[in-house]
Amino acid sequence: GENVEQHPSTLSVQEGDSAVIKCTYSDSASNYFPWYKQELGKRPQLIIDIRSNVGEKKDQRIAVTLNKTAKHFSLHITETQPEDSAVYFCAASGGSNYKLTFGKGTLLTVNP
Amino acid sequence: NAGVTQTPKFQVLKTGQSMTLQCAQDMNHNSMYWYRQDPGMGLRLIYYSASEGTTDKGEVPNGYNVSRLNKREFSLRLESAAPSQTSVYFCASSPGLAGVGEQFFGPGTRLTVL
Image (cartoon, chains in turn brown, orange):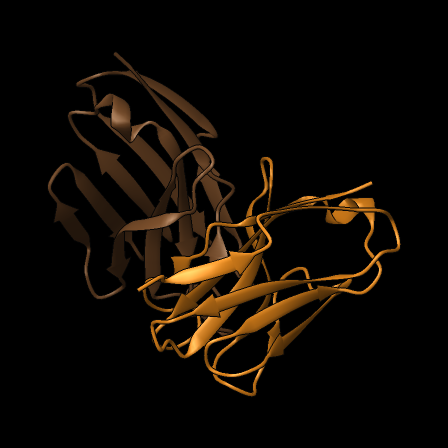
């Protein structure tokens, strides 16, 4: 089955800095890569996703890049703000079983 | 729209007891999922249902059963709870194919098994 590795597990940045979270996946047939944000005590919510026919996607301060050859994708957050503090999960699906497999998460802390 | 709702919000069980976690969605979605979330482990799929009347195992199905009662409701049953099932359980739904497209999560159920 699919295996998704996510790094780093924790990330601390100063407000205004950029943050980058990286994920790798194992199933070359995977073609859908979402990112979810989970604030403390809340439910996960989709913040951005990318499909395998696109290399990069942006939404205001958030961007995701995908390298299918290397089987890795990354989340980039620019001009970080304290409200960006949360756990971020990457995920992959669309391979042999169509199940969404999540990484273990990255705790991002943005210090004012 | 309420989105995805789950009951109960909190539950404490003793080892060996049984219980059913309820989930309902009012978005007319085809696919529904049950995940468990443990510290440092991310979200792990227990079972999913791609459409009414069908269910399939996820990554960690042992010790659980599910029922897709109708298009709106998807329940998760623990027949004989074990301490290893202490976790936060999330139900989710999505409009299209299982695993592809945005999943909408419920608020979660925090379960403790003593």
